[in-house]
Length: 450
Ligand code: PFF
Image 1 (tube, rainbow, N blue to C red):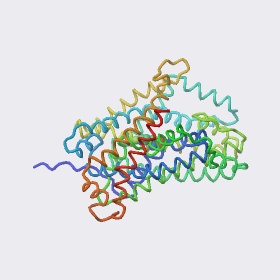
Image 2: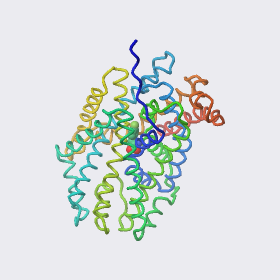
Image 3: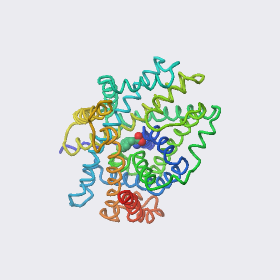
Image 4: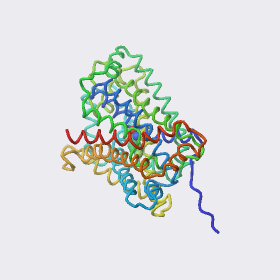
């Protein structure tokens, strides 16, 4: 009898951590988080964010890993397999696959800018230019048709290249090289930023809490940011969980992933704000800070050529390892549910993602009429995925694990068959069954009422 082909797995604990932290740490940490913190009360936002990470984020990372590892399947297959025949639950999985496509669309657009910025750094484009000229150049390139699309295509290609190689020889191998590189660059840039005169003002901006700015908007923004940053609620961690070995302690792995992700977000703030303040610039929100202001600032520092280049390489690596997990959600679905080969699944999913990303990119043109809900397609996709699809996905994922999966199976998976985490299992069960769904629901509902 032909032996069933064995599923590919991560080969080591370090490999799992590198890949999962790689998924979590991305553009969301390095350029979305500092802007959010800046806009929503600095230290006050940070406190709310940390609360959400500890109370909800960490248990949810573990939940997704548990579902994936228990089922040994992609998100659609996993909900089907664990729902004991109740078909409706697989909708969460399908929504995750769709969400993967939608995130990839705007994510690759920004990733394309990061590649272009690496190129501009290499040719020393930023040198001697003032902010207005750099901004003009950035806007001009966004408004071009082919160049941004070309960079997007390059980015999708390098992501597809890794995915086509599979888990241990692709995602794991590359993450184990890329994530240490990212860490080294982060540390170098942090040290540089902290040594700038006036750095303290920047730190104050990031860490000093302004509680008057906390309101419901801040809560839902922090929730959306936490979900986006930790890659929650759309099946990425279910997919990676399905490649984790049965011996791995999911509690320590989840803690490492969630805390590293948060730490990197804070480090990114420590790079960005001191640099801005030491040059007397009020950090404004949005892409301009990372793509225009920072290169201009770096180029006024000693050794600026190198720091600027390192900063954009950092962004490329962060985006790349995150895109891998987004693509893998779709690819694993196509392989296991629609029986495609990995090669074909990779080609179809990356081509599909590229096509939607063209719409996202073109919607940013000055004269574009490509809009949804009154926003550009680019902004619309960002909001719909992080604030609606991922939060709802997360809500139903914890409801599923707490209420649908048998308690015995739940505890078995959490404790690796009764060998680890025995003391934590009850409290974890109650968090997933009652606290997590209630907390997410309250934040979401309060948003609608207001
Ligand atoms: N966590 C990534 C970031 O912070 O940039 C974004 C992301 C990656 C979201 C993978 C969802 C996902 F499945």
